[in-house]
Amino acid sequence: QVQLVESGGGEVQPGGSLTLSCVVTGGDFDIYGMTWYRQVPGKQREMVAAITASGGPHYADFAKGRFTVSRDNSKKTGYLQMNSLRPEDTALYYCQMVHGRGPGTQVTVSS
Image (cartoon, one colour):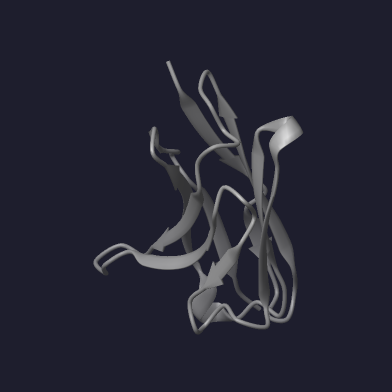
């Protein structure tokens, strides 16, 4: 059974940084792309960033210049480095691949 599990969320002050990880177990990793989404209750989910199987990144406009998506195929792990965090970045962040999605990790940006 394929599982995706995120970690690295938490509470930070505005301007702070967090790095999220998404570990995949039980399935292929290096041949698929990964997408990071975020969800706020009562709102539609937003695509944050994506990385192709070959490592090509794509970002939502709000993430450009602040977030960096990456992957380590040897560890079957994807990463989302987030800098200059803002209160509006507060959300549940989760990773998704062709296998499915993880449960998510909460990011709260508050002073």
